[in-house]
Amino acid sequence: MEKRIAKRDQIQVDIEIAHPAASRCYGYAENISCTGVSIVLRKGELPPRQRSVILNFKIWTGTETLYRKIYARVVRSGPGKIALEFARHDFTADWIIRDLMFYQRNNDKTSRMQRNSYGLAQDRLIA
Image (cartoon, rainbow, N blue to C red; front, side, top):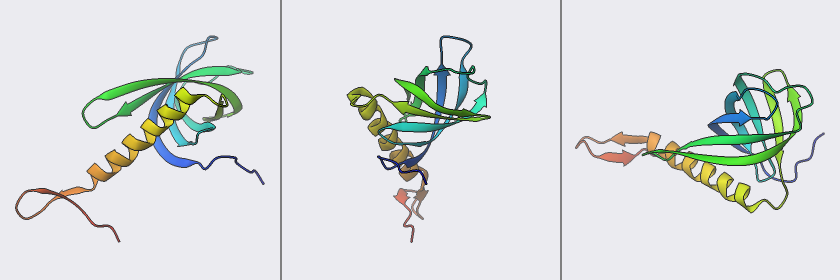
């Protein structure tokens, strides 16, 4: 059984993966923590024995798209899915992950907004 140091959060954020050896890959982050991320690939694949990559996250804020870059090390690579680890004590990566989770929660909340009988937006209560 695998033990994780950090709690993983479910997330779905578009991502572009750049690596020096070949063309870019595209996919989405499936889950993320302060130590790493699991990515599902939609287009492209990593070359065999690829060690490090640059992750370009696309974050929708509700009004515009922000782009954030994190460097990561490849831990596992399989067909259609890769696991990556961030550098320890990388404060920039930590703040980017906080941004991702903030906007993910914010977008989830605004997607639950409904119009009441007066046409005003209101938050729907979920039991």
